[in-house]
Length: 123
Image: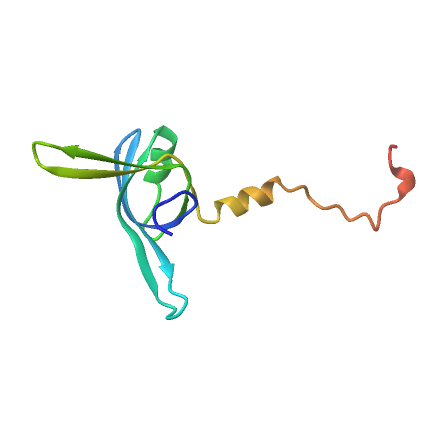
C-alpha cells in the first residue's frame, strides 16, 4: 500500500518540534497472502504539518495506529551537497477507531415503537 491517502500506519516515535510541526517515525506494512507474513512497504520520518494536525500528532503514543488523510511528498535537490531530499508531509489523519466512534455518535438512536400508544402521538 505504501505512503498514500487512506493508508494505515503504526506510530513508533513522536517528536513535537513546534506548534505547527510534529515529526513522527511511522511504518506501513502489508500482509503477504501466500506466507501470511507482514512486509514493510514504508518506514521513515513523516512531518505532521499545521496547528491542528501537529497538536493531535503530538499526543500519539508508540504503537498507535492511524489512517492517513491528506498527504504530500516532495523532493529537493541540493547542488552544493549533490544530495536529494524527500519530504513526507501529513496534513490530517484519524486515529484508528476514531471514525467508528464518530459514525456511531452521529447515528440516530433507535426507538422501540412496539410499546407506543399511537393515540398519544401529537400528529
